[in-house]
Length: 126
Image 1 (cartoon, rainbow, N blue to C red):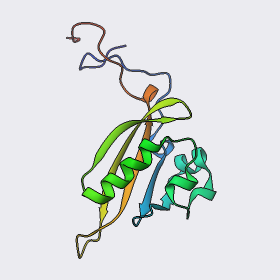
Image 2 (image 1 turned 180 degrees about the vertical axis):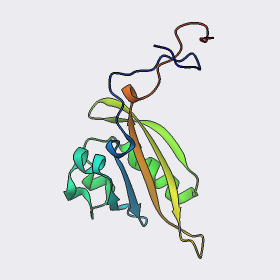
Image 3 (image 1 turned 45 degrees about the vertical axis):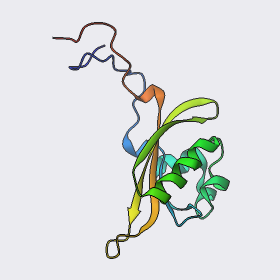
């Protein structure tokens, strides 16, 4: 089925925002300090309090390089990463101290490829 932009929409499984894994990491060690229900379901509650690279199993090294780059540069970034061999879209944004504007952590979420619109199949729907 096409949406108003002409993109095919995958309606088989569209998780809510709460079901998509999301977390907040603090400090240069990327300690997971907050996780939403989707993150806890995906990676378990034991990952909270651990460095992301130790507690988030199944993600490739590119995911943790992305977190480090966002923390270092202060710029939001996104990229495709592998999670248990499947492509996932990871986006991350810096968390700033409201008073000093210094970077104190990184917020990120993961989105399954099947959760994204599919490319158009032909001319846009009218």
